[in-house]
Image: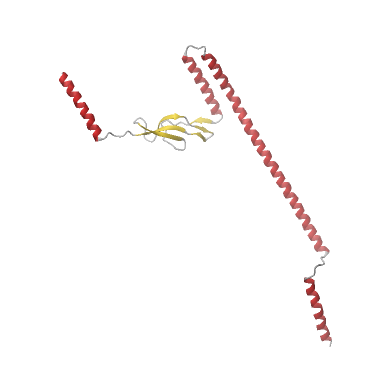
Length: 209
């Protein structure tokens, strides 16, 4: 009878345990509740740190962009200041040319101003590309066509229409050039025609003699 009562008691308890799994309210221990609160606090702190980091990054980006713009403006100011003397010399040259009678003196003055301007460009990192007589390079030369000549090696720059320039090792403008190629040999028909033209001329000389 005792065993029968114990089995009945176990049968009564089991439904109670199953009902706890489906209960609408679950009793949480104070320790577990404390852990949840601690994790929630840590999550809030991490979120605040993330927001502060994003704000600092955005402020740094704006500051760097502003400093970059200021540096560019300052650099341009220096270049313009260095070009002002060139303008002054041009104006002086124009005034002097109105009174000068010697064109050579005017030409000398223009060359001096040009030399001054090129020196300023060189100090800023701008230098001309040496193209004449050099092998044609599509990275630095712009071909305008070919020139038949024996004076310059084939595939080399024979003449230059417009100078090219480099800025601190980078291409600023390609040089506009003409590339040399070997002259075409005359055809047999052209050779025979030239020989026929020379024969009557020689016969005419003999007749006159």
